[in-house]
Amino acid sequence: MIDWESMFVPATPPLEIVIRGTVMYLVLYTLLRVVVKRETGTTSVADLLVIVLIADAAQNGMAGDYTSITEGALLVFVIIGWSFALDAIAYRWPKAARLIRPRPLLLVRDGQILHRNMRRELISEDELLGRLREHGIDDLSKVREVRIESDGRL
Image (cartoon, rainbow, N blue to C red; front, side, top):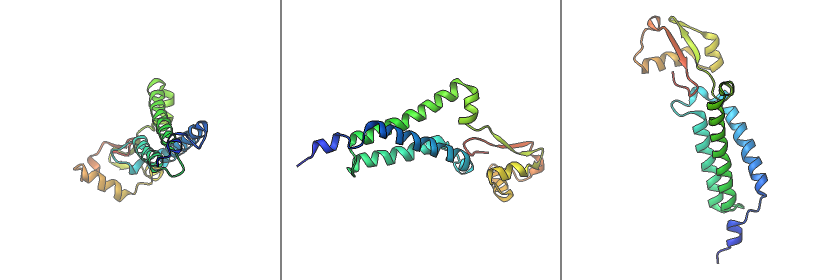
């Protein structure tokens, strides 16, 4: 027998789901923006975060593990809503964009490695040189500048 009520009627108050989803999204976004920038490669931190959180939220709603489909759907809506809101804010207000999307950071200028910036991003000289070789650059003295973008690409 199917328990339709437990499948669709939330056991958790919807406002609590919105608050929990909001707090977790913003905390994880902030942590990932600060810590994982160099590791993300071509996927932006926000994209990675949305994928992970949506997968987790949808799984909880589908598994029936003390949650309803409605709770999972609401949490997915909150996560997508925050992702859209942050993108819209960054687009509309350039000052906010600097907080939401970090600026590219200069790692090499005129063939000289900027060690302070490398330490800031926790990138070793060997890692930098390896990533430059992936782009066909073998001689650092011929490089005018290298920047790490907000999504971790050089």
